[in-house]
Every structure is written in C-alpha cells, then in structure tokens.
Image (cartoon, rainbow, N blue to C red; front, top):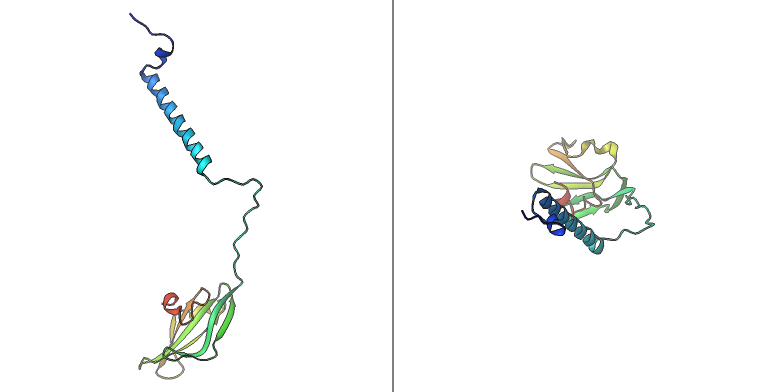
Length: 150
C-alpha cells in the first residue's frame, strides 16, 4: 500500500479537500471584491460634516389673474401671489352652455382648499364654476395649466 505524505496528501479531492478548495476560492473572490471597492469605490471622507436638510421654500408662488379668456389671455390683474406651503394654486373656470370659458386664477389657503376640483352653480343663471387646484410653483399659469391641472 502506497501512502502519500506531506503537501501532496492535503491536496486530495476527498470531501474535506473539496471543501478547502471552495473556501479558498470564496476567500479569493471576497478579497478581489474588497480590493475593487477600495480602488473603484467612492472614498469616504474623514471628518465629513453631517448632511444638511434640503431647503424647502416657505411659500408657494402662483399665477394670479382676475379675468382671463383662452383667446385673449389675461385682461385684468396679472401678477404673482404667495401662499404658505401646504396651500394651493387655483384656477376657476366660469362656463356656460355655449362653451365660453372665463378664468380666474390665484392662491388658495389650506382652509379654502375644500373647493378644489369642485363644480357648482354660479349665482348667474346658466353658468357654472369649476375649480382646479395644483401644488407646484406657477402650476396654474397659462403655459403650465395643461400639464398640472387636469
């Protein structure tokens, strides 16, 4: 019977030998991954200051017009209004059965937002008022209305 001794014996492919080879391969892969992350990874600066919270504006800026038509644009009072964040910009559409559309745009406070996306009869017979709110800066101006107000 011929028995091997020394290093040749430890390289046998018995159950323990295969296990040792797999462990060695896992260690090589782990070392390669760690080295790659050190070489190609983003370095972590020492003494880094804590991240600053994002700056949130205090006010929502809205387009305001007191009398507007799609054909002629704003005819009375075009400017900007400010409302606290959490409030909304609004456009009121005053319509009748002949499809005329007069718009009034401005700001709505949190307390007044109950009429957002609401249709109601106008005090003038034959007209109704449809209100639409949006919540981004200038989302109710004529250029942005079709994107932000449905």
